[in-house]
Length: 291
Ligand SMILES: Nc1ncnc2c1ncn2[C@@H]1O[C@H](COP(=O)(O)OP(=O)(O)OP(=O)(O)O)[C@@H](O)[C@H]1O
Image 1 (tube, rainbow, N blue to C red):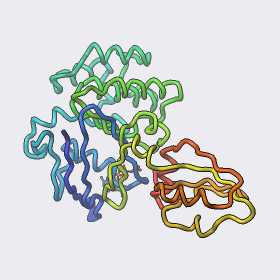
Image 2 (image 1 turned 120 degrees about the vertical axis):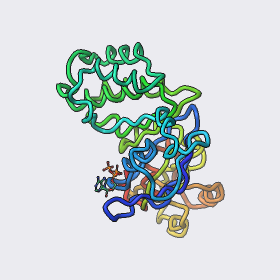
Image 3 (image 1 turned 90 degrees about the vertical axis):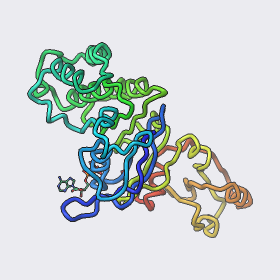
């Protein structure tokens, strides 16, 4: 559906994107993660056509979105602050979006606004930061566009509304549409995303399906008898998340490693549920802070 192919973009002489490639498939929610300043917002601006790429292509069903302006109506970007709409009332914003986006669903928009108890006749400026995020996400989702890009949608949103917002995002994806969410909240993506894209050094690495990841990567708590088996622990494919005395929490990817672990001198081994954050800590080189 939306295909991103070797995107390059320099901003102020700095290469922000250096070959980002991935795909967004219909009916899916994809999480975009990466450290501060890695270029997630820049990438979203490129996908919406706000920026042109220096090199590379973004195509929606084979049509280059930077060459065919009308395709952009199928792609909506919800920024992390709706500054452009500050002067309008919420209702006026709905009317405006209804004119821009042919599939804008006004009833759905007003339904969401009602669910979050947002004031339809007040200006966007008068809303709190969290309310602004709820409102702009509602506006974006109500376009019923085929591709919806959400930049940190839960930023500033309280715990109760966050739960509702995540449910809303999940309910909004249809078999014909897809949603890309940039977020530092890995536990939220863990709950709602189908796949994850990690942006690092301007490049996207492999796109991981969360379901497959949970099957492939084992998280184990091991208590060794006497001394820990350093030979086993120091293998490249074993990642030690935590060590407290003789208790190790590790991640490992291969069945062969699991079999060789079973031959070690252990008091206890226990399988734990893998969290996206654990895996991320591994892939970020162990500092656990990429997002
Ligand atoms: N308008 C701009 N002018 C100059 N530099 C910019 C501009 N926009 C972005 N940048 C730079 O481009 C890089 C990528 O910024 P971007 O906002 O895309 O990162 P991000 O991954 O979304 O960050 P965060 O997680 O902090 O929101 C940063 O180094 C940033 O300083």
